[in-house]
Length: 420
View (cartoon, rainbow, N blue to C red):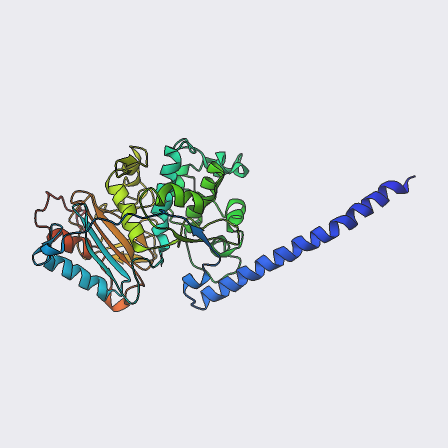
């Protein structure tokens, strides 16, 4: 009789072997996919070629065309902007090798130009324009009651963090980049957390379980794709809906935008909410228009009344970043993407913005959507990274158009620090 327990244990072990073997095979397969992605990225492959698989994102069933300026006014001014200013801005966009150039003013589309075979329907890779979109999705979830507030603990949705230092991370910290998680960086090391968090087939699980916390949450700005990708985790757990489905039905459809596709880590895996959704250029203009109209579209409130003000208000840790959006802040000639004062990529500003309240969506490779609330102006440039010889000027497009307004409002320029 004493043999019975050992026989039962052996039988249980034998039954478990196929499952264990299957799990090991799945782990090996996921690692192979990860290594293949990393190898391609390190070899210089375009990131767009690594955005696989893609999940469909729904949009408006029948998008209503945006109102356009009357062609009869093109000889002198279009939608309140001088034709020569629009021509100069379009020429700069063309020089930058843009795929799309759009201008919105006085409630109308003043300019719409596509280049090199791109059309109004072409889904374009957005890079970090995904971050303000994710911030709007959080605002929509708050409006609908799925999330209590920006100051709700993320651990309410990621209970794995309860009782750890990460329990101090708030929802707003995922949007204003003060989560305390490791800054974005670059490494060829296959074991680097930057690579694992970005390219692993189960990247969400890696970020939750293993991505390092380096600072007290709320104490430091640290731009990070891993931090932004946690928005998808929070929204899926808060709503019980796929991120792509929620985004499409609750954000894109209400603003009249067509849908597109979003990069997921694996089939039915977690979406990357911090980078690289593919949408037509017009979608980003519609999103900016939603912010310009304080979260209301066609008389319907989509976001809480306070939310846009929160989005465009910077933090003490970075006076040039709000919730997923960059703000003018104090003028610097080269504004970095990382924590102020730290080395890393930066973008040139040839002069201060003419509107100190200007804010923008800004993605890698100079995907830009500038918004001047005082002028009711939006200008968009999407496409490949501009030629190095151009040394892209982030202030040029909006300032060209602000100077070209026929009846300009009173504008206060971006402040220049003493000695700046």
